[in-house]
Length: 332
Image (cartoon, rainbow, N blue to C red; front, top):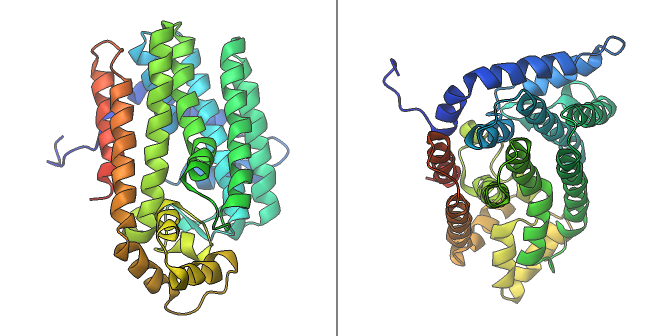
């Protein structure tokens, strides 16, 4: 590292998988092309090339490498995972009426909602084409189930997000659907394509599941205490969008009558006023729910690391362990 800077775990993993990641990038560019609808590559490129970490496709490549795979189809599966993820982002930004992602204007803001939704649909279709190419029914089942679970999680979030009766078990169900399902599918298919022993397949599934849950809990926490220049989001966006995430769920459970009335007005009824975000932060700090949420994230990250136990010693395994630590280190 000639610059003298210390690489982050996902950067070290990207360096170790540089050849495969280059192949994934080339396949992304090839498959997002459209002869008849030039808006498709325009919209897709805006998001795909926005500087994301591409953590999910890296997890597929890492799992395949860790399990000794030496064929070509981990590239197709990693690209499938990235297309599913990108499609969900396009749809999410429309649903959330977002104006910024990764520090840049969203596609729905630069173009329109129709373009974002339809290009997202196109990427979903492309992902299903790609997942058939390895010729593995088990792989297709894992990824198609993940796509369905993601959609189900997003719909559940719509019904639960502004309902103060939503508890932590429902929140976990939402997170497992909308976020962890793709993490666990990404790691699982990498091991399946390598014909890994079932113990190793389960270990990598469990790792992806716990990592995805930790990742989403951290994202929800950063919405209240993160650095907007680093996250690419404005502090309090979830509050303004009336999303009932884990810090608020914990605060509602501990609220007195006056505090509950505040949450009913701001979250359930959406009648927000100047100073409400600051008051929400006061309540979260009063009840220690930000610290409690951070403790939950640390626990899930620890479960992710523990899940890797059955896998053989390997530098990739060490990097996956470090990534679990890094996911929660973003809070410090």
